[in-house]
Image 1: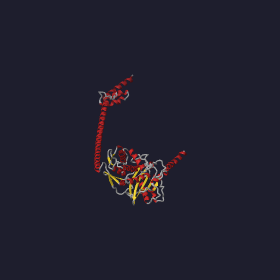
Image 2: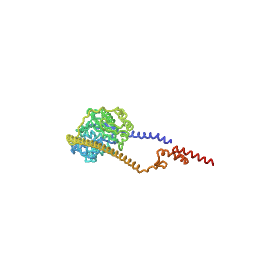
Image 3: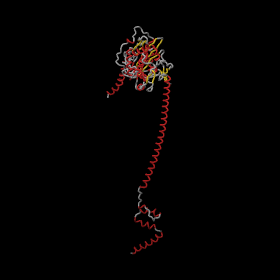
Image 4: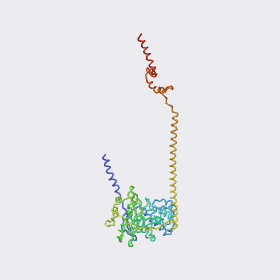
Length: 491
């Protein structure tokens, strides 16, 4: 009995101890770098392997733009949505298989909407298959100096073999800026408009942090909330990489604080560069799913300016602890989850949507969209008509069922009555007792008195009959009796 009680007391403490173990083991990657020089202003776990999520699309974009630069394709190249692309999970545009879109519009969509179906279409269109494009991603990454990255898909959906590091993503960001200066606007689009739908950029820093001009966010449960961000102030551009955060809000606030810190620092000639950062001791990325996507709370989202999370302020403090940076710098006070609580960035500036379309031109896209809307309207009308017809048929069936039920009741009642009549005809009549039978010649008076006489003793029957005679006859009988009596006495 004592052992059972002791066990119940120990179990909760053991559970708390198990939760506390990862807190000291996980260091979320953070990196602040000068874009021009590649000098590191701050780093934390910068070479630790991590699940990239949708910041993978920066790699997809580099490969695509590199193919354009080499003349292998153009921004007007048409890509076709395959059934495999259409089947990719959200976030997505939801185009039907067979829909075509230019590479230019596809890149705008994946940078703003982070559409997984469009990323897959880019991979199939430029690499022949998603696997072939992944080989191109790995080859390109190795060529531009990304040492730790391993790519298996073009959109960053969960793949346990797909890793990157904060250092590699900063190298990729610098390469995009250096090699494609005329495409920098691609990373700062505040929103896209497709038909009547306006979709805001997932990057919560754009339009909210002064000078923010790119690049890409990402989120999966196993990797948390990631961002590769850039900002420019007084002609100086800084790249910040923040990974593994428990919410989009914390990710954005920490990135903003890191920008403030970076713009207040100057990299000396002895500062580390991206190439000289030491290798990590971790053999594989940590899996944050149990901490980021708690089953008891809503799944976090990374869409739009109001992205929320399943609440991880408390969990994050337990998992991540506070910053291990130089705490003498006030900018790093916000790196602990407890200090982010209650803070938010200013409201987003008004969106300036960029139009995107399917097909070769806006006119072709508008025609296709109009046809799609007509088909959708026709489908809606058909569904409404089918619904009305189904309701009418249901009512008629209900009426028919009710009438059949009433007829069945009526027939059952008729059958019951017929059975009752047949039973009355065939049933044996009850026998009348002989004593209860009234003689045919009896008068009403005699019949009424007969039952009483039946119960009298036999000796009184004669008396009864005598009583029934007229009174005159009784008088005559008396003298006869006396005369007989006198004869007896004389003898």
